[in-house]
Amino acid sequence: MARVTSVEDVTVIATESLSKRFPRVTALDRLSVDVGPGVTGLVGANGAGKSTLIKILLGLSPATEGRAEVLGLDVATKGGAIRERVGYMPEHDCLPPDVSATEFVVHMARMSGLPPTAARERTADTLRHVGLYEERYRPIGGYSTGMKQRVKLAQALVHDPQLVFLDEPTNGLDPVGRDEMLALIRRIHTDFGISVLVTSHLLGELERTCDHVVVVDGGKLLRSSSTTDFTQTTTTLAIEVTDTDEHPDGTRAVREALHARGVSVEAGSGLPGAGHILLLTAQGEETYDVVRDVVADLGLGLVRMEQRRHHISEVFKDDQEAEEQQRKEAVGHGS
Amino acid sequence: MAAEHPVATPAGDQTRIHNIGYRAYDGPRLGRSYATRSLYSQSLRGAYGLGRSVKSKVLPMLLFVVMCVPALIMVAVAVATKANDLPVDYTRYAIIMQSVICLYVASQAPQSVSRDLRFKTVPLYFSRPIETADYVRAKYAALASAMFILTAAPLLVLYVGALLAKLDFTDQTKGFAQGLVSVALLSLLFAGIGLVIAAVTPRRGFGIAAVIAVFTISYGAVTTLQAIADTQGSTSAIPWMGLFSPVTLIDGVQSAFLGATPSLPGGHGPSDGQGVVYVLVVLGLIAASYGLMMRRYKKVGL
Image (cartoon, rainbow over all chains, first blue to last red; front, side, top):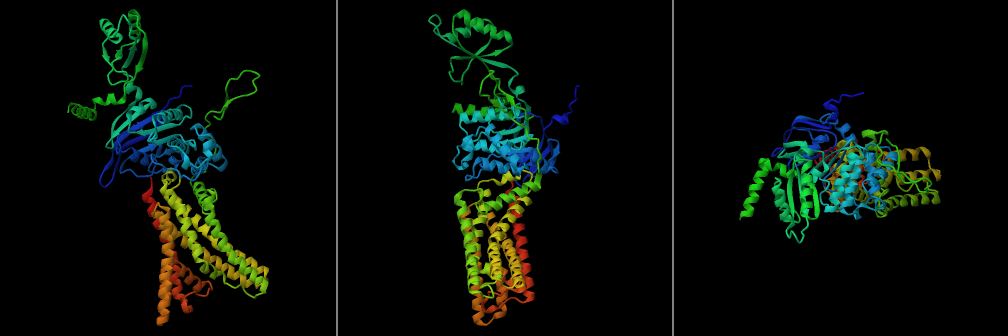
């Protein structure tokens, strides 16, 4: 039987002209945004109001004006109920070094209301899911940054919340750790069925992970839309070919041949292997065929042909903010 | 939801790999008061180093033993010499052992609260169902209980020993009860002062030093002034001075109402009227400690 899902049912977080003013600064300025299930990125520079928003959503800090709901519960009156269903991973260090991950997470599970036995079981499960095994019995003080981040994540997930707030979870991680963390965040939604609100000041890393991105700046909503809207309006193809004796500069030969077929091509400057990579806009399926034929006709080897998604930051080049940045960069390059 | 998805394995294979996958939790969530109780029991155990490293068990356990050994010796002496009374009053015991008690507060109050501040665990607590007041109450109750265990255990040793030595039952029971009331007040007062000082600093060392300083300096200053007043003959001022140090406060309260002999120089205990002031000051300090901690943690928040 078809079930009509109303908007309320699929809204995990809803804010309505939410404002938070401190004596000197306005942290949030009439922010109205709806967030559905899935992984949502909250992007903004440091001080854009991300942490303030999380505090309000956890019911820990009253809004100056406006209202907000988390999982259909009003943050002003139902803070306790919200915090029982929500997990929170803070940006900063929050782990005592002299206890083991197991002891710590069990304690935090009980602090979320789980009975002792359930707390222990869930702790073992959760630590395994975030990728901590034998080391979980050792004191946290001896852990690497990546392992500590996993413990922080585990304590946010141990009570099986419906929603988790992850505040800058990739902070301080090396590129590999960053990728692992992002993959884990993705799994929190796909495998665990938990919605995620993840903050970052890096647009790039969220586009791979999030279904939806909310951009705030100076406490104001800059943009809220799904990542596919951001990045899949057009598809850019990156092509790299080999050189042969017949065509010593294969890249150039392909560019000319494609040009002759009416496909506009630009050099992929700024990418690794710049000069050898060509970027072209795929109009549809046929573009792939054209490329294949052209490369085959010339007798070249096709090293790569891959879809390159637009970076969210490129989308924002339209925005005033980004324009300014560009201008600054241009000036910087000029001098 | 808790279904297991066995990975397809060839028939007859001895090893079966189970990919348990993520299991949702649909059991009970016991909420705020349970969480507060959990924090209380964790903090109380922590005050004796239980659930923590071996190193952190040493000091509290040692102090506990040091508290009880004199009581054991006294009991042994009383039994051996067939004395008709214990060498020390129940109410007097904590006053004699004040430096041990003071060391205990100084070491365990910062352990209880400074660590959470220093390692920034406090925001994690407040991201859970408990409120600021629950955290403060759990921590306060835990340290006060730990101190009550520390101060009441030797009294229990004395009491059991007194009964074994066949001393007067009603006499001993009354003394024991008075002693328990006195150490209960002492535990609340000392724990409150210790926690307020410790909650100010995330540095454990500072916390320990500050707590010791407050207890010993105030006691030293008050007793010195009282001694001077005594030699100068201004005895009426002596009881009023006792209001300015935690140890003499407890001493004053129990001298006025719990049948204790005042340890003030010249035996100048507070009068009944002054005793009421003492009780009010003690209760006021306990309430103030609680209030100050609430204020402190309202600010710490996330």
